[in-house]
Length: 326
Length: 302
View (cartoon, rainbow over the protein chains, first blue to last red):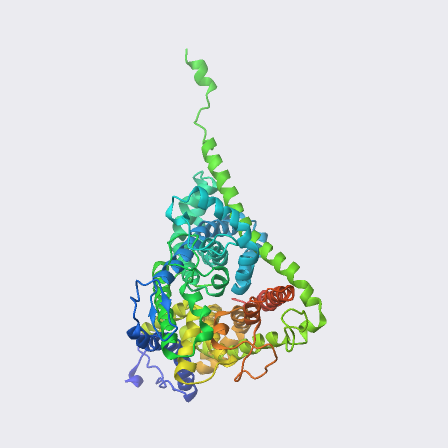
C-alpha cells in the first residue's frame, strides 16, 4: 500500500520507509513519563499515608474530632478536636488575605501601568525579595520588632471597636502582640510577593488595543485601568489570591513563633492566641514517639492537606490554566 | 439678532471635552493609592532587613562565626559560630537538589515533549497541587513514610526527602517554561537530519534551555534553604558538627534560629539575629546568582 502512493499529478512516490523506533527513544520516553507519574504518585501517597496513620488515632479519639476545641494527646488519653485549630488557621489566613489583596492589586497596577519602563523591573525585583526572606526570619521580626509596634493599634481597636466580635477581648493578653492580628499582618506581608507576581503577569497581558482604545476615547489612566486592565485580569487576580490563601493556610514557623499559646478555647476574635494546624503540628514535633499521639497530629495534617488541596484546585479552576505559580 | 453671537461660536463643537474635576480627582487619588501600595510593600522589607543587619552584624564580625560550631559553648556566652549550621543547610539542600533536579527536569521534558491527553493534564494539575502542599504536610508525610513505616531514624536525609517534594514543582515549572521557549525550528532541523527524538532533546533542546533551567534550580534552592518546618519534624538539634547526612542530629540555620529562641540571654539574642542574617545572605546570594544567570544568558528566540 505504501508503494502505491502517488502525488496529485499521478507520479508514483518512492516507497516510504517505516519509522524506526530506536531503543534510546523508548528508554527516554519511559524515563520522562515515569518522572511525570512520580509526581502524580507522590500526591496520592501523601494522601494515603496521612490517612493510614491518622485512622487508628481517629478511632481512639474520645472527643468529637470536628467540634472539640481540646487537643489532648498525653497521659495515655486521646481527646482531640480541630475546632480551634480550624478557627485560628482560617481567621489568620483570611485576615491576611483581606489586607494583602488590595495592596497586592495596587502594587501590580503600579508595576505594570504606572512605573516607568526602566524602573519597573528593579521595582518588581524589590517586591520579589520579600519572597526570599525565610519565614523563620519573618516570625522573629514579627514577634520581636513588629508585634510591639502594632500593640497600641491593637489596644485601640480592642478598646474602641470591642463591640465588633472580631475585635472583642481574645483569650490571650494583647501585650507583646502575640495575637492573630499580628500574625495576620505578618502573613499579609509574606503573601504580597506571591499575589503580586501572578497578578502582574496577568495585568501585563491586557491587549494593547483595548488599552489604547480606552485612552483614545478620552479615558483617564484610572478609567482605562478600571474598564480594561482590571476586567481582563480579574480571574487571574482572584486565582493569585487563592494561591496566596493556600500559602497562608500552611504557613508554619512564622505563626508558631508569633502566636502566644492560649489557656482557653478560641473566642473567634482577632486578639486570640492559640495554634493553627501547621503550628500545632510543628510545636509538638519533638514528641512524635508513640504512634497514637503522633497519629492525632497527622490527622490534623491531613485536614490541612485537604484544605490546601481544595483551595489550590479552586484557584486553578478560576484561572483556567492561564496562571502559573511564581 | 442672534447672528452676532452665533458668529462668535466655533463652527463645529470642540472635538474634545475637558476632563471634569471629579474625574481628574479620581485619577489623581488612584495614582496616589497605587504608589502608596508599593511603598507599603517596601516598608516591611527595608525595616526587616535593617533590623536583621543592625542586630546581627556584630555576630558575623567575630572570626569564629564562620569557622566554628557551638560545641561546648555555654548558652549565655557568645563564642563559637554557625559553621555547623551552614554546612547542614548546604548539605541538606544539595542532597535534595541531587534528587529533585533530575526528576523535575525529566518530568518537565515529559510535559513539553511527550505528554498529550489526560495523563499530561493530570500531571500538570498535580504539579500545581504539589506546589501548594504546605511544608509541614510534606514533613509529616516523610515522617509517616520514612520514619513511621520504613523505620528509619530522624536524619538530615529525611529533611532532604521532604525538601524534594517542595523543590520538585518549582523545578518542573521553570524548566517547562524554558523548554517551551526553545524554537520549534531547532527540533525540526534535528529531525530532518535524522536525529532521534531523545538525542534531539538531550543534545539540542536541553543545552539551549540550560541557563534558564539552572536559574530555576537556583531559585528553588533558595526557597528550600529557608524552610523550617521540615527540620523541626525530621531532624534533631545539635550544637556540634555533623557531616553525615544519613545519621544523627544535624543543625541547619533555620533550626538553629528556632532552637536558640528559647535562650533569653544577650548572647542568645545575638546568635539568633546573626544566624538570621547569615541565612538571608545565603538565600539572597543564591537568588542573585540566579538573576545574574538569567540576565546574561537568556534564550535567543530567533
